[in-house]
Length: 104
Image 1 (cartoon, helix red, strand yellow):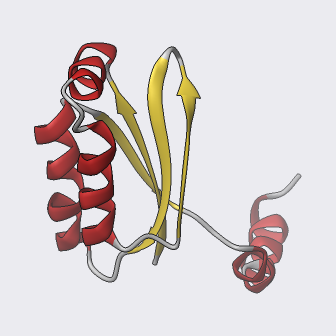
Image 2: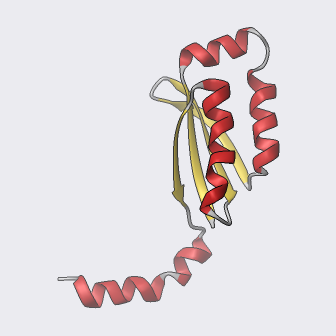
C-alpha cells in the first residue's frame, strides 16, 4: 500500500545534525533503506519536514521505517495511506455505495 510519511525534525536536533555535517547523509541513509517512490522536503510549522511516499506491504514494516527518524532526530511522524489518481478512480464504486447508503 502506498503510504505518506510526514517527518518533522525539531530545530534542536536538526541544527545539531546540520552543524556536525550529518543532516543530509543521515536522511539519505534512512531513505536508502525505505526506497521511497518520492521524497520532498519543506518547512512546516518552523521545522524541517519531509514528505515521503513509499510502499508498505505489511504494517509490521512500520517500526523499521519510523525508528531511524526517531533515533536520529527525535522526529515527529505521521503515516497515512495515500492514493494516486488511478487509485482514486478505482475507489469510485465504493464512494458511490457510500453516497447511496449514507448520503442525504
